[in-house]
Image (cartoon, rainbow, N blue to C red; front, side):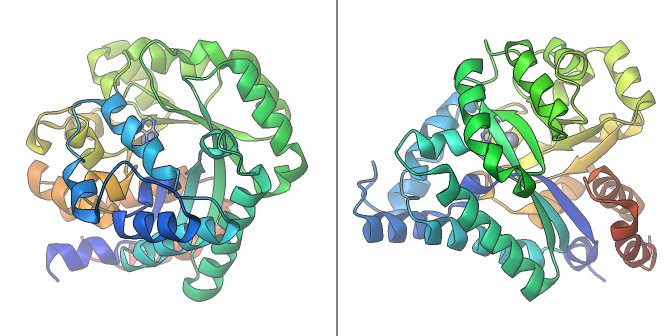
Length: 334
Ligand code: HPA
Ligand code: ZN
C-alpha cells in the first residue's frame, strides 16, 4: 500500500475545521451569483491568486469577504455536504465542525438559517457515508465578550444541536481571558469548550485557555514548544492539540513544512492530531495534511497511526461509538 492510500485508509477524526474555510472559489462564485452578492474578485482564478497570505489577519480579511456569498439555508447545506464528501474520501469517520455565526448574523443572516443548513448536511453525511459529526460554535475573539453573550443568547433555543463552543479569529491582542465569563457560562450549560491558542499568540495564551477558560482541547497550540513547563503539563494531562500543518505554513507560522515542530511535540509526548483548518484556502484537506507532513517530517506509519488514534480519542463522542473505529485502525498494518 503506498503512503497516500495508507493515509486515506486511516480512520480519523477531523477536530479543527472551519466550515466557512471549506468554501472553494468555484462554489463561492456560484453562490454569489445565485444570491446576487458582489465579491471583491473578478474570477475564480483571481480569487485563488489572492490566497498569498503573510499572517493570520491577511487570511481572515479574505475569509470573511468570501463568506459573504453564504446567505440561504441551502448554501450552508451545500457547503457542508461538499466538505463531508471530501472528508469521506479522506478516511474521516467523524468530524467536529467549527462555525462562525457572528460572521453571518452581522450580515443579516439568521442564526437558525446557518444552523439548519449545517445540521441538515450532518444528517445527510451520516446517511450517505456513515460519518458522524458535531457542531462547535466559535466566538470571534476580535469582537467583545458582550457580543459573544448576545450570540450565546441566540444559540440558546438550539443548544441540543450545538455540542460545544470555541474561540477563533485574530489572536494577538485578544487573549483568552477576555472571554472568561462567557466560557464559564458555556461550561455551566454543559457545552464542551475549546479555543484557538498559540497559533500566533504566545504560550501564555495557551495557559490562559486552560486555566481561565477550562478548555478540553487546544486548537493549534504549536507555540507551546517555546515553554518547557507548558510542554510538560500538556504531555502529563494529555491535552489534545489540533494541529493544522498546511495552515501553519500558509500563514507563515513556519516558513516551510520541514521546519514544523509537530514531530517535536509528538516526541515530547503530547496528544497531537492533524487537521485541515481552512482547506479551501490552505492547499489541502485532511489527507493532504497527513501526507505532506509525513513526507516533510519523515513520519513512520506507526506515527501516523498514533496521530489518527489520538484524533479518535480526542473527539467528543462516547467510548462506545469509538470502538468500531479503533477496530478498523488496529486492523491496519504499521
Ligand atoms: N485561526 C484563527 N481564526 C480562524 C482560523 C485560524 O486558523 N481559521 C478560521 N478562523
Ligand atoms: Zn482554526
